Length: 148
Image (cartoon, rainbow, N blue to C red; front, side, top):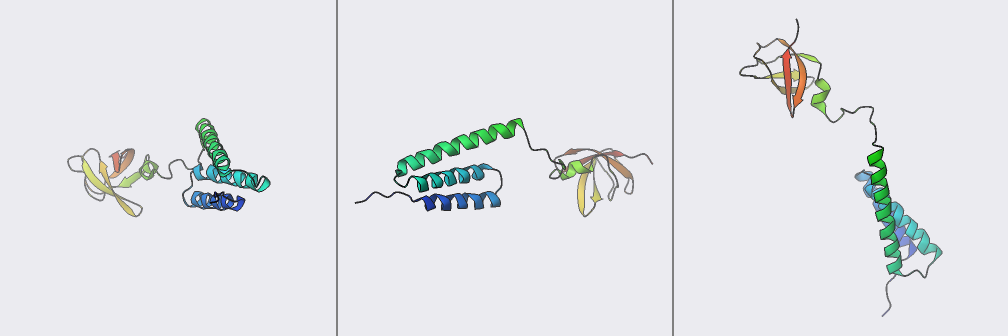
């Protein structure tokens, strides 16, 4: 019975699969696994007699080292965004002024912002009053009466 040993192209296929996963779920983790698999594929192509255990060991070591180095690098140099509030929608409204759609009664009311309705908390005010957003608590905007 012969022992199975992966061929170089198996590693290239694995590298491609990791590349596709990285495109679908970006986060740079699968990128390093794909690069490691590609390097083992090149090594298996250059040294076709390389045992599968050695290939797997090389892949494992390369993957762990690459992921560890990338994590350390990204932790010390975080990616800066030109739009840091992109996924913090409520925080984008802090400092802006809106008109109350419903009165604030017992500290709660609603305002219409663009195409959505937001719950607000603040001092009681009649409907139609201008309010300024001064904070966010989860999905609730904290407001205060704006100067008329």
